[in-house]
Length: 383
Image (cartoon, rainbow, N blue to C red; front, top):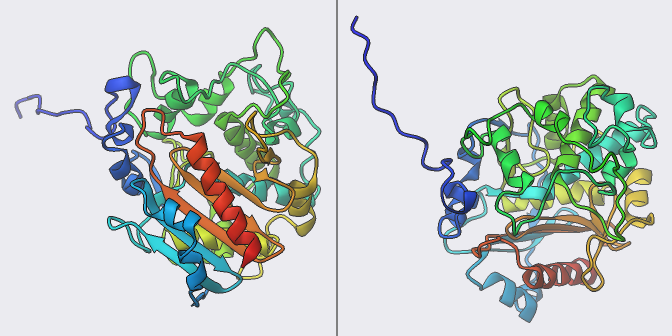
């Protein structure tokens, strides 16, 4: 056989081009990217639930007629929104290019999975959050070795991992090569998630957060996942299946991984809008699954909501960041890059999911996100 080189080309969705971004995250193609991310990364797993949480449609027309809801659901960024109260779907709305069964990239919203997993281990006395990370991961680098697990949970440490969305070369974007969200380059070679995390270093041999706010770093979530794997002796897949089964989703739970199968817990899940609200209902039931599997505990979830922790940032009246979740002392939730949010009020039994795609250069707009959260908080309290 004659050896010959076949013509190939680099995957255009993942090739890094302008502003150090792959095509799926360029402003003009980001909407397509977030709507189709479930099939774009190089490495992805998919899980479905054997039992689906049955929700009855009982639409409250008052929600859809609210001015804040109209403002948030009629703009160019909107994708989908769903509100579930206990076992009733009381509101949903979708953009013309989206629908109830289509998955959407949730980004950092799904850091809340780690809140559940760590909560489960703490509840069972398998994990002491006051111990240092190096106790559980001896090979971890200086960026995390001296930090306590609790510091990592609360985003209350400093190291050389950067998450500035205005900086297109921040580590949060370079991290994407681990998961196959972008093609590697000579300057940013692909590595396993664990190797990437081990190579994060401290700043001047110190890890103290000297600000008065949470120091948000997505790598923290992945370190916690690694700790959970070691402490529990369970595979990542076992944890994911438990969460999916406990939630009772109707569609697929798509989750990107590295090539060794380490999932992107910090932001790699795509699912449909109702299913993200179903995931929120798991918090309304304080971790009790539809299959009666208990993940975490009422005590840990209530503590996450009520305990004193650092404000998320320096905006006026921001939520606090506690145990891998946002909270204002009543609701619990999390935001996601590009315009995503899940907000849950356990007192009223309401979970609100919201998907959208911001198309500015940074994919962030804090005024827009503030309006979104204010709307969701009001709905979760009043209905």
